[in-house]
Image (cartoon, rainbow, N blue to C red; front, side):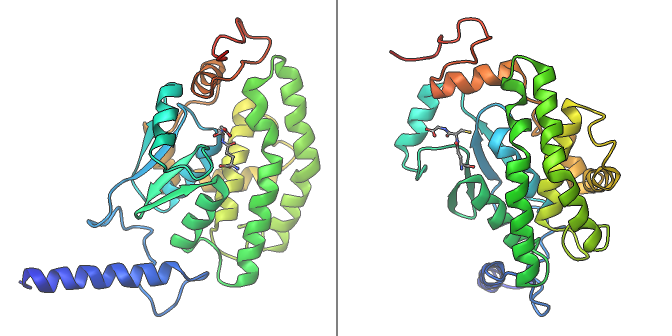
Length: 276
Ligand SMILES: N[C@@H](CCC(=O)N[C@@H](CS)C(=O)NCC(=O)O)C(=O)O
C-alpha cells in the first residue's frame, strides 16, 4: 500500500501528464493519459458546470462534447434576470454572455471555444493538423447550417420554419455528403470519430426532430446521424435528465425572462419581460 505522500505524488504526476497531453493537437502515441474516453470523471475532477437557460440552444453542442468525453456535468439553469445579473457580478463571464462552462478550473465562454477545448481534451481532432483544420471547417459550416434549426421554435409559421430547414439542407447537405464520401464514407474526417461527426450529428438530430423526413434525400447523412446517436456515451446523455426537450414556446419564454427581451410578436404580451 503506497504511503499517502506517494499516492499524492502519483496523482499530481498523472494530472500534469494529462494537462501536457491536453495541449497536443493529436494524440501522442507514447502518452496514455489522453485516453479519457472511458475514464468517467477521475477522482480529482469535479463535475463540470454548464450555465445556461432551461434548454438546448447554444449550450447543446457543448453538452454533446462533454458526453463523448464521458465528463459528468450539471446544468445550472438561469431562471430570470436576477440570476443573470448575479452571474455577471461574479466576473465569470468575459463577454457577459451565456453559455458559461466551468471545467478544469477554467471558465469558458463562447460555444466554439468550448467545442474546440473538449475536442482537444478528448483527442477528437483526428491525427494531424490537416485533420484538425478540416474538423474546424466542418464545425464552422455546421454553425451556419444549423441557424434555421436554432430559429425554428421562434417562428410563428412552422411551414416557413420547415422551408428554411430544407433550404439549409439544399445549401450544405451535398457538401457534407461529398466530404464524408472523400473521407471513406464512415466519418467526416479520416477514419475516426471526431468533433466534426459529433457537431454535425447534433445538428442533424434537431433537423429530424423538427421535420422527421427531411434527411430522406441524404441517406449518408442519415447514416452518420444514426451512428453517432448510437454511440453509447451519446446515447446515455440523450436518455439522461441532462438532455432538454426540443425547444418550444416555453423555452422562448424562459430565454426572454432571463434576457429581459421581447418575445416574438405572434406570442401573447410580447413585451412582458422588457424593462422600461
Ligand atoms: N458566440 C457566442 C454567442 C453567445 C450569445 O449570443 N449568447 C446569448 C444567449 S444564447 C447571450 O448571452 N445574450 C446576451 C447578450 O449578448 O447580452 C457563443 O456561441 O457562445
